[in-house]
Length: 116
Image (cartoon, rainbow, N blue to C red; front, top):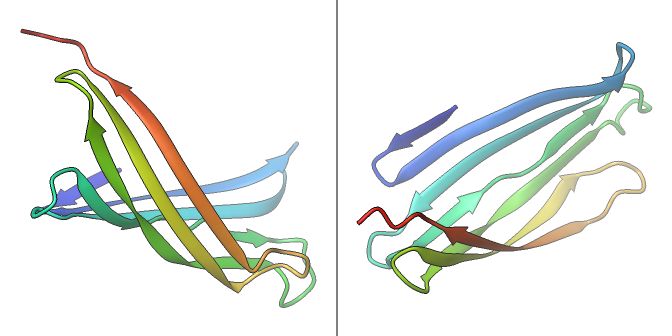
């Protein structure tokens, strides 16, 4: 579900993963974005992947990243553009052998039909 309120966009995904009905991990990924009107194509967002391992030892099941990033749309023509994004997350809570930081670089190429 995507909700747009003014310059804000909100959505989320919740999934439980496992095999043969033996579920062991849950994933929740909320997404919040703000489009900056004064800079065309620029947005600030956060989309942490929060997980819980149902079979982990007590106190070791949660992975909770805190952070966010930005994206910029770069148009090449009226039908072609590239989206460039960078985000960073510090893990406030992680599994015993999990990372302390996560950095994501996003490059997305967009091609639209010319309907003129």
